[in-house]
Image (cartoon, rainbow, N blue to C red; front, side, top):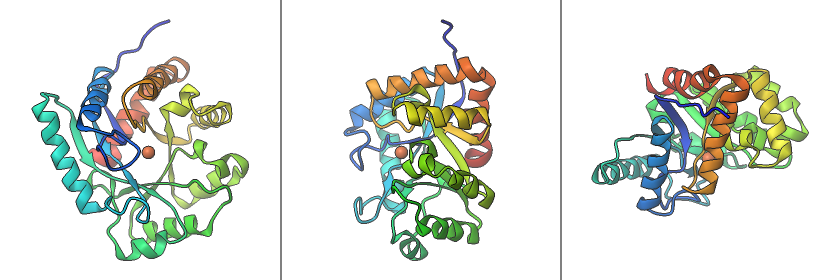
Length: 244
Ligand SMILES: [Fe+2]
């Protein structure tokens, strides 16, 4: 089987910032994960720790910026040339709209894009209200890996409803690999086939098996949907929306 080689990719969803959530647990793990990402063609990652105020109270916009600045120094000391940008992954809860009306909203690399996820088993008005808040502020909502969200699989109409509102979708490489089970894989492949994702990302948490699965997912994406899909979803669109 051919192995595809890539360059210039941007990973806009990652948990490389150490010791702030369920991602990398140390500087060493973060360096190891980023080294591996670099080997397979990434030039940098947006750090998107989980932003859940009642669960990770330290993951605020200023603290994430401080963490990214420190991690840049760690990478420099390890002689690892790999770009890092600030971001966050907001998990929508009942209190999210009230909270973010009065607290800074993390955006991706200083752009106008905001990454959110949702884990509830039922659809919640909180999602619509949160999306409306972003749109009111001219921010672009990006729904992280809808294929992994139970309600997106059981009540598929919400995917279209969100897209109709102006929400962009991003798929996860681990879903494409099959690492989150056959139902998740099936929806990911369907959304890819229908060209409904604007982006694909690794959502790297730690080095090791989980990261290798994501890299295998990238190879599958290239094999089944073409190398151009990888470049559109993991280089060109991230550049256009977040980095340029
Ligand atoms: Fe994530």
